[in-house]
Image (cartoon, rainbow, N blue to C red; front, side, top):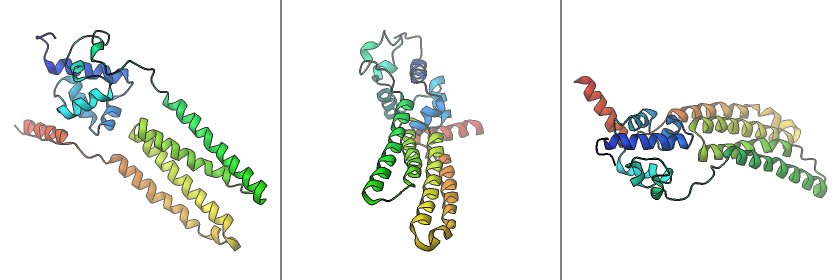
Length: 221
């Protein structure tokens, strides 16, 4: 390690390179670790260092050791600090598309099964695959994507569930009673508002709160 280069700069450069290799923006990384993009920007500029617990979490996420983060050099030069061999990145979009194709097949199977066994033409089965697919996309967004995608798919899931539930009641309940409870569709409005508010909520970690107080103190001085 070059003693003339500050440790903060070395860690900052390594964190920046690793994030870019993952194809993440600062905002996406911040959401994954429950920090603000401002905090991530400070790390990558070398203004501050993450606390040891966060630094270890970042190293585990990038599949490197802490030694990797504090040493200069290319990935090949620091190969001894890799936790495992590089693998091809998971194509999350392909997995999502393939998974979403399964739901319509299941709905078709349910429709045919009910038609053959009970002579029941359950055409609503072809609509229920929509909320099922949005549920899968919401799960994938939670696992792999950002808060924006989670919120979008959460809203679409809510409205799809509300609409399908209304149609189910309208078809199943006798004398058209189900069609009269159209107010159930309005449930989608508070669900949408709740999801939009949830998108804005983020609990600040202690380190970020401390940094904010330090910034305020420096500004007041």
